[in-house]
Image 1: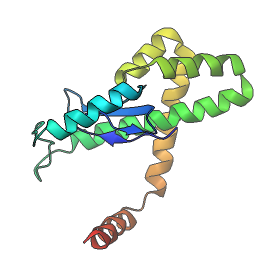
Image 2: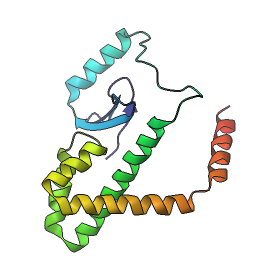
Image 3: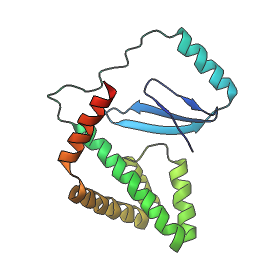
Image 4: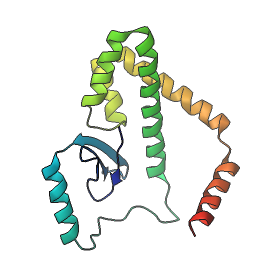
Length: 163
């Protein structure tokens, strides 16, 4: 599925899939997907034409920030990667659990944060533990492989390409 992100609201791709990006109370980014019909697409076009500059709020971009928002997004991402990894494992080894976890993820509206893991633990404690162990393992592998100098150079090179 293809999605698009808009911090201010929804964006449509092929008139069907939407991905909303909103800031949580703690400053993290929450991504949610849903499907809409053609009427919603027309209404969005009208709203965009009529809307002027809208200031949503400060996006925590000061140099003296603690980067807590970045840390939270990294946690969300590694939880997402762990869920994908566990789903791939279950697809091959346990189709029943695969279907259950797939449906749980599809019906989940909380993103991949703490609440996701808590709710998964309430429903299927063993799967929650498996996701948590996988998440920690993936993070450990990433820390060992991540070359911070290379990342810095990639960011610098991309900045130069844009200018």
